[in-house]
Length: 267
Image (cartoon, rainbow, N blue to C red; front, side, top):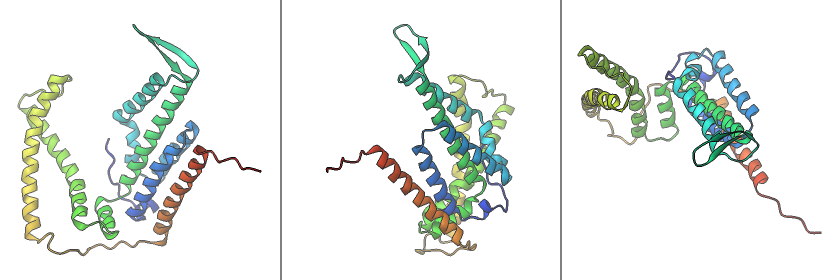
């Protein structure tokens, strides 16, 4: 299931989107600097509890997605098979060689899998508490050119429209007797052939209408634009941005001192 915006009045909903984006970026960077299974599990549980606390079930629903489970399982298996270091649990016999499954490989795979799930759940929580239009407006007020901001808004607005159009095209093809849900490469090619082309035609028609509307409103005439909705950047938002930057800098300095050996002092 895809995460979507959930209306609410929680503290996460009221934060400025730029501050939440900075916190998410700092989280995604910082979590790669720790290689502990316990730390990854604690972080994931904290994000899930935060999602339940604000009543955002769409963020937690990502955990039920078969794609997320498949990718996490594949990450564990890949690291367990292709990491030869460590104490072997057992060996997979093949025709020409054997593959040892070691404790270090399994541990590394679990760390990467929990890290991956934590990042996608945190991203889902960001999407569930941030209105797309407010995100674009906040970035434009922060200095992003409004043409790029409008491009972001357009992409976010057209995602559910195209999803609905794809379902409509698929149902229309099924009503005509085309079985496009069977597995296999041949069925996939048939599905692309009979659904992708009508979807492209529908998308181009909507783009034409959007272009005419933009020309009628003289889009791009001025170097700047005004905003109908004003969102205040509070002290709490500024504190979150500053804290996010500081925590990333501190962790990088701490890890750098661990990676680079200090020179021996001479007496």
